[in-house]
Amino acid sequence: MSGKRRSYESGHRPKFMVVVDKTPECARAVHFASRRTARTGASLVMLAVVDPPDNFEWLGVGEAMIEEASEEAQKQLDAAAREARSAAGVEPEQVIRVGNRADEIMKLIQEDQDISFLVLAAGSGKEGPGPLVSTLGGRAAASFPVPIVIVPGSLTDEEIDALAG
Picture 1 (cartoon, rainbow, N blue to C red):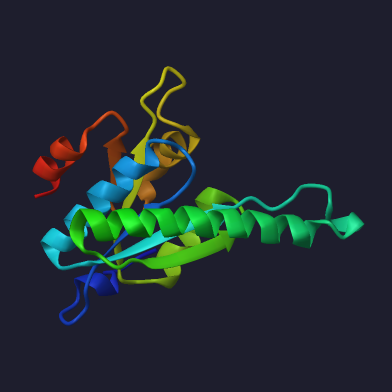
Picture 2 (picture 1 turned 90 degrees about the horizontal axis):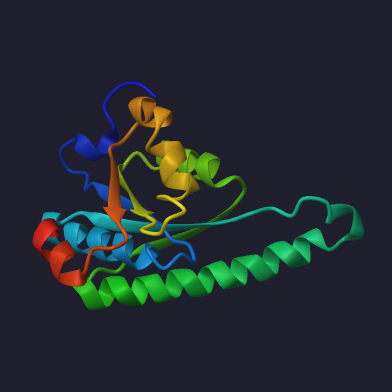
């Protein structure tokens, strides 16, 4: 991706994009993104990615599995949207994609030129920050088209509020 993103042009509102999943740390990223969105006058987009089934498509079960997983993802997005409204009065755009998580994040950023920041939650357990943070925050970070904000899962609402402004 080359050139300036549209979000930096006059008349366009930048967007924070937060990846929503079922990890406990996700709420930290949602809270941070909501507060920064409200503070900066930006918009917020929440993305949930459904993993495609591996070997069930030939049985006709694949579509049903995707539909079930999409319904669960919508519940996660709805809960995250309630958190965004509660934390900062922000009404987020909700997006569900099916595919590889890192690929779908990149595709959405490429499609929506107003996305200016990617917000990810970092796990606070002994397992490490999580595969998505490790992948996107590692070597890929140097070539990523937008800044990646990694929110530690151990931060409290008060700490996030102080950091987010």
